[in-house]
Image 1 (cartoon, one colour):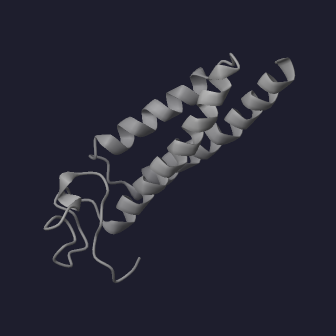
Image 2 (image 1 turned 120 degrees about the vertical axis):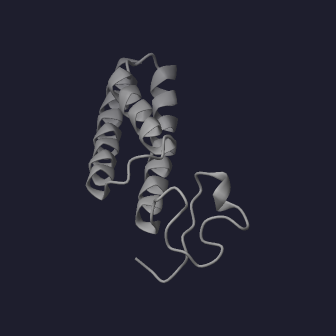
Image 3 (image 1 turned 90 degrees about the horizontal axis):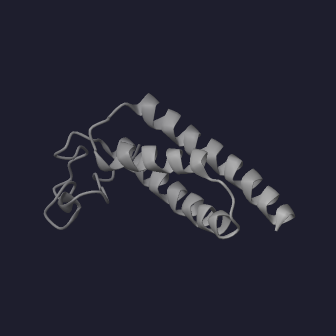
Length: 113
């Protein structure tokens, strides 16, 4: 991806002296810089999705299907044991789909409210 060293936001090894501090491109967990960045994108997507989800909840809308994707993705990233590029892309697509669904839920909730 780049000549930059590995940097991961997900564990204590991301701090000074941790993964990437010596120019390595793979973390001690086995994750490379591409997967680390994909997981970062997942977390950023979940932040936005969660904000919309909270708004929908305030309007009384049912959000279980979106909640399921949020929980699944948090588990996916926090367990830090899945290093499949293809599965990361598939999970990102689920987040995108949940975002689309969330916008529909919000649109309907605003029409009802």
